[in-house]
Amino acid sequence: MPEVSLELVKRLRADTGIGIMDCKEALTKAGGDLEKAKLILRTEGKEFLASQSREANEGRVEAYIHHSGKVGVLLEVNTSTDFAANSDTFREFVRNLAMQIAAARPRWVSPEHVPPEVLAEEREVQRKQAEKEGKPPHIVDKIVEGRLQKFYEECCLLKQPYVRDPAIKVEDLLADLGVKLGEPVIVRRFVRFEVGEG
Amino acid sequence: MPEVSLELVKRLRADTGIGIMDCKEALTKAGGDLEKAKLILRTEGKEFLASQSREANEGRVEAYIHHSGKVGVLLEVNTSTDFAANSDTFREFVRNLAMQIAAARPRWVSPEHVPPEVLAEEREVQRKQAEKEGKPPHIVDKIVEGRLQKFYEECCLLKQPYVRDPAIKVEDLLADLGVKLGEPVIVRRFVRFEVGEG
Image (cartoon, chains in turn orange, brown):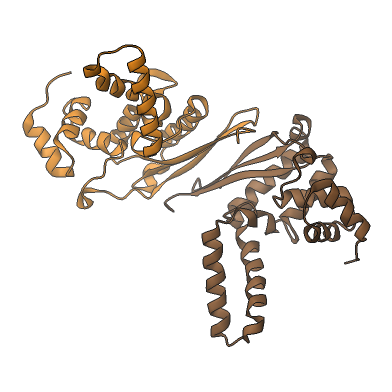
């Protein structure tokens, strides 16, 4: 990936109030596109400075029932305008996302939504495992962080590979859609019920 | 309502391990029908003695999206057998129940699911209101309990009047369906999303 200019990073930071490292990473992912980088930050659940945050209270609720009636998903995705929420592009995206949730069983929208106690437990398990494998102490932390990324890719919707095209992540799809619609697209919440799982 | 025999109440108690008063009430509602009374107790969320409890791990997940796409419901209803879960009678019931939730906005399945802190607050509000209305202290408790029943009828799915026929309650419909299918029908859980409500 190309290096992004410090100028641009500072500009993004000024616009959003978000840390330098996060801004740099988002800009790199966005190929230097400022607006796309903002959308990436937003889809990652980062809080913008209040003045910069555009309200996203429109959108759609979508459901998907697996044909057997044993699995169901309910999903809310928000946009800023009802116009965008009613576009075919948005509707199709929301339908596909509901199917993604049915198939790939994410547990949370993004890493920010993983409860701290779950994260602490996962970290502990990974640490013990790395130690058991005889990894040298000074690289255990790095290994644990690497495996946490895997955990996020499994359990967090935005970090999952998109089931219809595993080469891209759901968060990339979301950022692309935001650019296409010209406004932020926020996955607000979802639930997935499977008969008898409780 | 006719008086039910103590004999029958004791029999129900022996069968289920549930308290005399609850058994009597259920039998009265059920017009003295033992099986129907069991279903009423079950739909109220009462826990049977383990040995008496038939597993209900089958069922269906159903969704309902209001045509505007602004409101959605996801619902799981359980039965003991997949056979019952696939019957037209059951499917129709589950569909209607999903619509009930969209229209009547219950917050919990039954009174047993209302969080204790919500209940305590509601009780307190009703008590203060009754006192403000100048009700004599010795009847305030009774008034509060009466108004709590109203609260349950508003907020608990099973206690709500059925939107398609407000003369009956959802719990009666559920008990009737159980009798018809010959097995318990349990509303396991539901969610209702409305765009922008979060």
